[in-house]
Length: 359
Figure 1 (tube, rainbow, N blue to C red):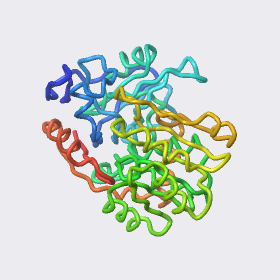
Figure 2 (figure 1 turned 45 degrees about the horizontal axis):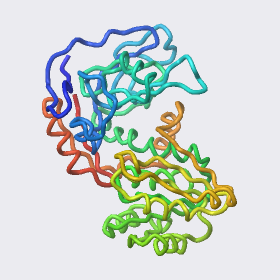
Figure 3 (figure 1 turned 90 degrees about the vertical axis):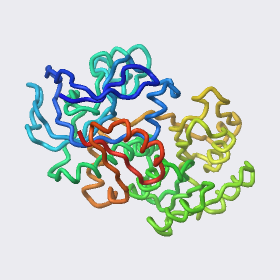
Figure 4 (figure 1 turned 135 degrees about the horizontal axis):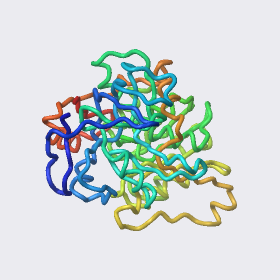
């Protein structure tokens, strides 16, 4: 089969012919129809992000495809089914605290690297091998619709954060990083889950206005000034009442002061979700006052990705019309132009933009 292979950090992807994946028990082979390209994939490939990858590897986290072959433990999947391939691979011998690897992207710790040694190759290929439990049926779609369905991979990240915080209908949410690719997805997911109001702080007034245009008056934009106390008060004033949940998805380049300003808007007994990258690039970490956390009974949830059933639940939200994939503007490339797709994704990583490879 044809695949894009990362052989060394800092080198372009090599487009070449490689052996097809071999089916094993507990696995499914997928014909990849469409796969998203992360906006920061260039930083993974050049080594800037220092992701744990045992090279050479076929990259690509998840995708949309059709079942090509199934193992003996699959009782409901059938050859030809349209599916979403969840890249979050978990070890099967510790349900309470499984090791995790993101197939085709990175791994966490020594156990995650062991997983990557087997489920190493991702979706920048004509076929991929996926654990059976990571194959999520979509129902009938067309080949053209597969491109839009790649947005699931982006939407799942904030959905996992809101599930961890037990977001309830009617609550007020603040999304720290609302003008980014994952942050804008968080705004749409929170509204789909029934949030009465989403506070959307940011510096880009054009994007803030676009969020209001897309989703209406339930979105309350706040233009940040960079002054921590002033910004915190402005975010609180924008809310119709106490802020029940703060979701942070700021990238590593952002000052922790900006994140703290948002986090400390949450009400007493409120919840904070941390899914961003502050401190990951070697800078200062997030500092929060111990007395404030303790006396206000603040719950802080560090969340990486989402639970195993999240993809199926999110697919149901889309099928119900509560979450619109049509918000995403897509640009497609074939596998021969995978390097161009990576460059395009880096230059066009804003809200509701999606770069897709169609092998």
